[in-house]
Image 1: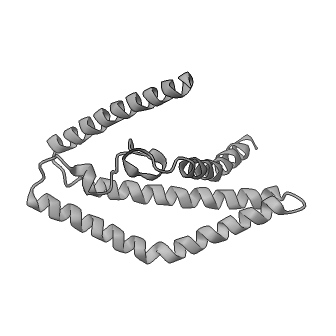
Image 2: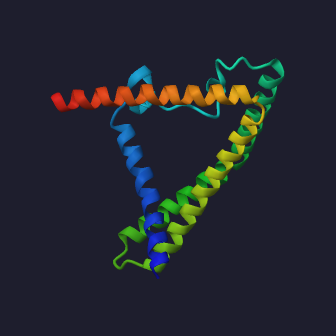
Image 3: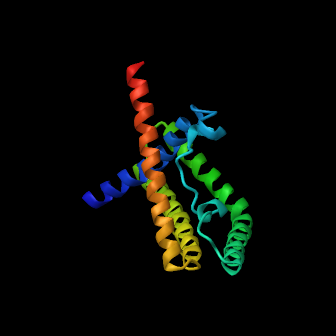
Length: 169
């Protein structure tokens, strides 16, 4: 019973967290470097820019391009059905929330399917990243890790600066 409550809590938090992040991002339009939500600290890990400065060979560049194209093709093929499924889940969620009586069993079922879908998306993302990382040499991987740590440090400093600015206002 306790395990079911934990899963329910996790399942309920995922849509709430994603929804909250969406609301917060929309509240900060025109952030740094012209990006919506000011997410300049986020390091893309699935595009070209993640591998800039690694001195890739032409062969590596071609392989990474092939992987990105494969993923893009796959995403386009799945896109319409995924969007439709997400719309249906949101509609079911809306029905549950607006119903006269709360159906906990149905809520658990819906939340579980939402978590399963999000998990599948995350696993697919990790699989793609693994494919991309396997193209790199050990030295390039180390450079990427260092680059990521450096960027995280800069981001932390920016965030601290912004927070101290807000506190002084």
